[in-house]
Image (cartoon, rainbow, N blue to C red):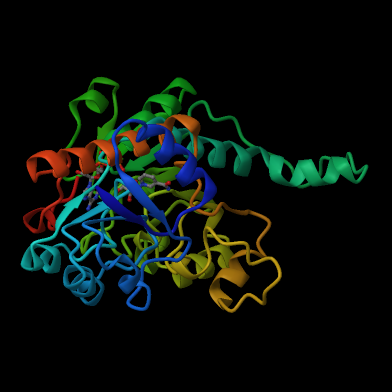
Amino acid sequence: MDVAVFNTRPYDRQFLEAASQGTGHSFMWLEARLTAQTAGLAAGFPAVCVFVNDTVDAAVLEALAHGGTRLVATRSAGFNHIDLKAAARLGITVARVPAYSPHAVAEHAIAMILTLNRKTHRAYNRVREGNFALDGLLGFDMVGKSAGIIGTGEIGTIVARILAGFGCQILASDPMPNPALEDMGAVYLPPQELVARADIISLHCPLTPATRHLIDAAMIGRMKRGAMLINTSRGAVVDTAAVIAGLKSGQIGHLGLDVYEEEADLFFEDLSGTVLQDDLFARLLTFPNVLITGHQAFFTTEALTAIAETTIANIGSFETTGAVIHMVSADRVAQPS
Ligand code: NAD
């Protein structure tokens, strides 16, 4: 099958080529993001492969359908960037990678927690400059702290397991409680109560209308003073302006972000030679107790292998049967998994 791959980086090509050995698929590798302006490049391609920062709204889907595209395969678990109703209306099948390596994301969340706690991001620079003073590097023991996990699916469950291993008390919030966590001794609470009791809050829910700005000024106001907030889910689960106010007042003691509301214009690009236009993002970069990574939580060899293999399996299945293995349909918009 002919596949137009948008937003391609060298690692995408490397892993997709390896996974497609012997399948006969033919790829057009495009560095450009999929947008209304670039959709025409896929004309004549029955399959299009995208990533989280591509625009797959109704207008783009209409352009793709007009060009003969019948399959959109996203190299991600989340699918909030795709207008599923428009896809259904246009007869375009949408495939995703439901679980590639939840460990990759969970372990990155833990890396952020430990970095912010023990300030290794600051110690690294200090020691290289010959500054061995410990002032400002004070951390806390993880044992005995309350860790609140919002969203206890694949990733949240692994985060909970690792933090339980540190001796943390696990608090959880999810409309569908996970018996595996309850067996671990986790206590399920409404999110408002969880944030009031947790020393560390880690977000692992999908972005839905119900979770957009879940962490807003009111929720931040309910947090323990100096709490740590970690977001590796989707940027818009957090209200960035409210978080900045919380950092300035000291209400939020540590912030770890792998995702950002307006990341589409920033992440996955080398912008080191350009002037940063996003003032909220620029403000976040000024805090010593904020750690930001550019949507790299998924970025392990194991995860990229699994993403490529599942994507190729979806494309192969669509080619031979007309159906994909991991379909996302409009009727699941209200409750994505
Ligand atoms: P999952 O579907 O296994 O788990 C999501 C959980 O969130 C489910 O248990 C669901 O019931 C719960 N949930 C839904 N609405 C909720 C709400 N209002 N409050 C609390 N919980 C709610 O998904 P997963 O594989 O664990 O991934 C979680 C999210 O992580 C994805 O949706 C995606 O946005 C994000 N993600 C980020 C990266 C990254 O690189 N940073 C990579 C993969 C996934």
